[in-house]
Length: 173
Image 1 (cartoon, helix red, strand yellow):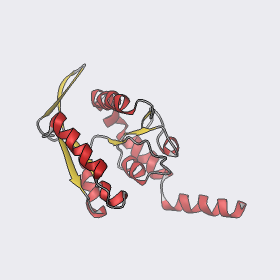
Image 2: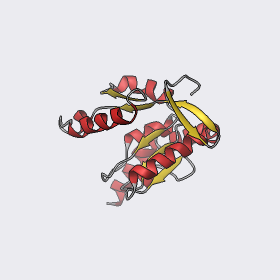
Image 3: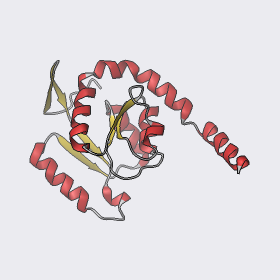
């Protein structure tokens, strides 16, 4: 978002751009302390682009907003059956477009083309690369959509609306 993102250069059809990939969080918080996947991911990142990919480790909730503000988009590539991802809802309420796997409840949160891009889990790595480059290439489009994404998400994902829907479901049961 208008900041120098570091030494990474991405070449797209419209030219070369600076970028930096921030991987926020730690698998240890979500995987009962098992860091094996995170360690393999860091090793792979170091092989590819050691100075262009940064792993933040655990970030307290009160500091996450800083990362959302500094981001151009958010990514949730997963093979796991996700329910209603808080990460995706937070990203959208900050106006960030998202790239996420078309699995579980994710398509109920992300509207293809309107506030993000859905990718299939069958060829996740290839599709993720293609779609990330596409969002970088189409940065002006997504920057213009930011207020619309933010407005729609804040309307959909507010506590009053969720509580009302929950009460309705309870009444129906």
